[in-house]
Image (cartoon, rainbow, N blue to C red):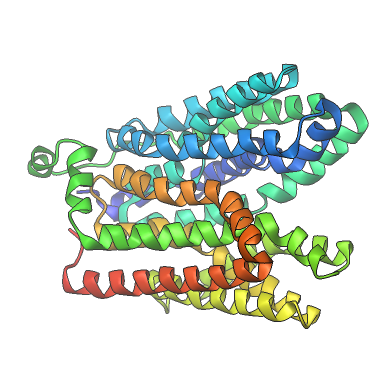
Amino acid sequence: MTSSASTAATFPTGRVAALAIAETLVWAGMFYSFPALIAFWEADLGWSKTELAGAYSAALVCSALCAPFMGRLIDKGHGRAVLTTCAVIGGLLVGLLSQVQASWQFFVIWLAIGVCMSGCLYEPCFAFVTRMMGGEARRAITRITLIAGFAGTVSFPLAGFVSEAHGWRVAVMTFAVIILVVAIPLFRYGTALPAPEEEPEERSKLPDGSSDLRRAMAKPTFWLLGVTFVMIGLTHGMVITHLLPMLAEQGIAVATAVLAASMIGPMQVAGRVAMMVVERRMSMQVICAVSFLFMIAAISALIGAMTWPALLAVFVFFQGSGYGVTSITRPVVTAEILGRKGFGSISGALALGFMGANAAAATLGAALWEIGGYATMRWAIFVLILIGGSAFLTAMALARRQPAT
């Protein structure tokens, strides 16, 4: 098994910082570049929002489907190659977007970017860190998400400034150069670590990640965590993608709505900072449970804000801080409840549901709106959060009876 103490000693703060900055840049260039540039694409290329959003949704679905495979590669000791190779290819593909002339080209490139995202965003990075650091991974994951939480803050202003000055094609080339010239060397440096030591008898019992995944899937806690993470991804995705039109429907000023949406990101970082303060006195599983209380408070405030707009500030605080810590709690509680053996395969399988839910959130929200308007969607989100929180509390209870191996 991995020796946490000895492994942690070989994982200096500088390498964690390198991974954090690299993650910030690939998130900014691959993930957030789409919402940051969609208005420019629509205006210049003449394609509908549905066509453009379809490419992005397909990329997220593709990323979700590829996540288990990337996790298995990381379990086999190929984490460094997975992170750096996917970042290199992803950076080249982002640059290739500058050459698109037809919608099918745009769609195909985004599908390929989706594959790359599955190998260089949070899930594979955290799988690598967990494999290398074992029980000490939590602090590294916290610091990585703390810095990478500013990816949107990097992406939106940069995309807007460059696009206004030189056009969106130069903007995507700028993102590509940043990924290839800055993020790749940081990934190479941050992942230059010796492989963790494992007991020979344990390797013989569990020869690859697929057997670990089968072991995990035989436990009800795996499926309960799956439901938990799906509900987190689905509810946050619906809130974010429909927040502006939802507020516009209630007659709330555009400037106020945009301010509310833009403050959710900083509140995510604030939530992670607060978690760092209390993590020594509160277990990560308890923090995860509390995050559901925060998200319940957030949707309750959003429902109330339709009558009293001042409650928008309460919604932003609780939604941002509650959802923000889940980037940290998801990998940590997965390792605590299901064990660290084959963590890449297990977390990749769970990411399939989480990322798939993110991809489906906008469509589901639109369907709920067509059925009964945004009021129906808001109450559906409330119920889904309750389901997710209940699933997690049940997983916690079962895990205490049967500790992870």
